[in-house]
Image 1 (spheres, helix red, strand yellow):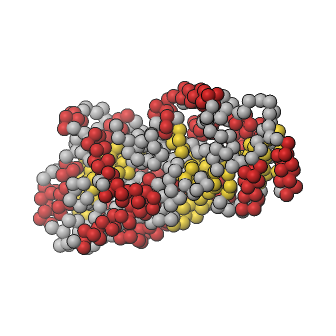
Image 2 (spheres, rainbow, N blue to C red):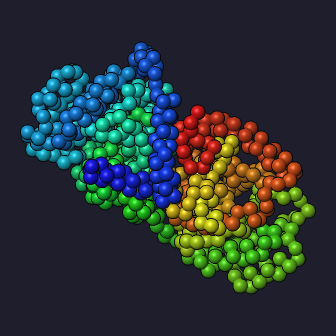
Image 3 (cartoon, one colour):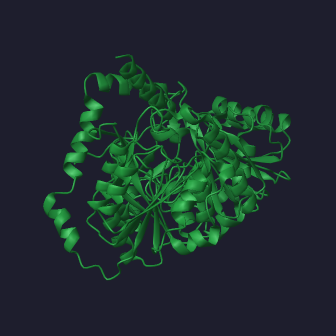
Length: 599
């Protein structure tokens, strides 16, 4: 009885850690009424392969038939769990595999007769046993010594593979034979193997998210030539040896593919980190060291720090100098908003090498007096005047203002924003100076403290929408993504920084998008130029949204908005059809909360 209660408390604590108070409370209520479990159960029912589909996979004549070497270190493994795992491998619809088991428990610690029986049942199963106990890295390396396959598949000794796991990997390799790394989505399974829960539907390859946490985890598949290049697992990172190995592999790989399907079931019991993250506290310290070592190998001047929760990390990039930042603020009246915004730039922000360019757009005469007062108080403010007789065009306004910018970096900022975190601009600059980064966005809050922006999902609501919009101030988001620096397809230009040279090279904002989606369009072009769009939660501002222009509440505004929707949808038709690579096709495009898409 008490074990069951303790188990439930562990699971509740894990959910709170990953998702925050708001989502935790909603989850708890949903659990009371069976809603969340029923939702994933319903999803599994709709998406689970039928017997006929599995049979078809067995008969599929793939042109390429890579040999998969499945590497599993054993350590005092409960024999029933191991049998279930082996059965899940033997039940694969793709049969060209070998199973390399390494028992590092030490002599007499496991049921040797049962182990022998498992091995003798299938000639594809290999086993090596150690007379003395081995730590996890040394044990896994023993298994790696046995591999002869084209690709290496890593699995834990008590988990389960979906029956189509290897087939999906082989099929993907046939579609792109250059693939060096594969990873899939995963969920958790109860100890009895009957109930599946907490699915993790992942982003495509996301280097900044990977530096924030080991989101790749399971199923991880790597080409053997890559493993030979980076070497074995390293004992100095025990507890996070897999994280360290993944980081080393991605550093030398150019072709990394995510399969957006649940191919791995992570068994959650009290001694596993799936169920109890505090069971291996040393692992998280090892994880931080793994990230730091990765940064050093990549010649990145930065420091890895522990994140807000276990298993999360923050990378602090070092700035050797403070490059000039030109802050562009379009404005029409709204003097109090503007004053608050400008005051936060000069009196709250710790970053001093800025110039502020107010792009005046048809204000009343009294507003010009406020401009003069601001210029007298803060010496680095320019006011440039846009022709008020022209139709309002956010893109043209900012393109005009950017012509006057003397900074190396541009910070597009709405007049109804206010800096909360003093190091926000410094944080954004520290990402913007990276050669692989084209734009940086911030965590924005509504006035009541709820989330207004934590990245943009292309396709959400039809065109694009803000991730986690409306989430509570203490919400962590789906698998803590509100709290993690990561790559997105876009961020809002209510607060967006980018290099001026890149902005000029791309031709600035598309003036065909006068009000809506111009920032998303610019981000899409940045991505097309093979630059990353980074969201950092450590740059925090209030955004008192819609005060500047009001809502789309007239016939004229609605028609203009619909026209821009059509314009964007046609321009980015292919990308919208493909779906956002930093989201997941199994998640809804109707809500902002990363909830399941139930068809």
